[in-house]
Image 1 (tube, rainbow, N blue to C red):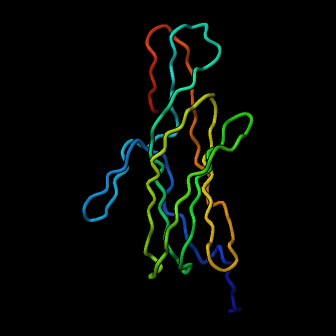
Image 2: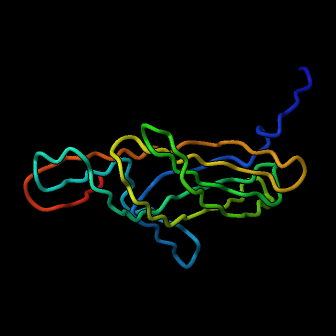
Image 3: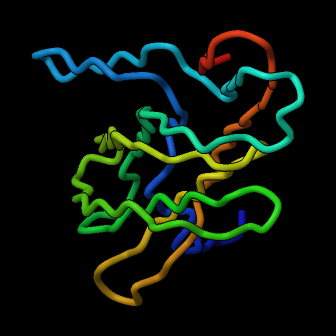
Length: 162
């Protein structure tokens, strides 16, 4: 067999989980439980003739899990929300983490977020990982979608995850 070489991305850290949920419970033993995983929100408004969605705030948790692999040391995790249609990048949430040996040791980030959703459509959350030592490489490890559905209706205003 020939000798194989690995690129830095193949050495880790490795993404283990990435999703949006209503909340995360963290037990005393460190185990996390994600409650109500969501990928769409339906926002209803009174008045069937309303053509433009009124902005509304929504609070949620973005859960990220990584495994160290062979990439040890300090890294920065950035969560970059992107609006639909115009692809405007909103302010990023940034977390600094430390990956330790052994290779299966993990890091979990529970990002409590509140966003003012002002337009329906597919919102993206780009997840970037930046190595803080050495080459300071930045790589996007995933994108998480959240679809905002606007339904103007007679009755009360409500937001429901789906």
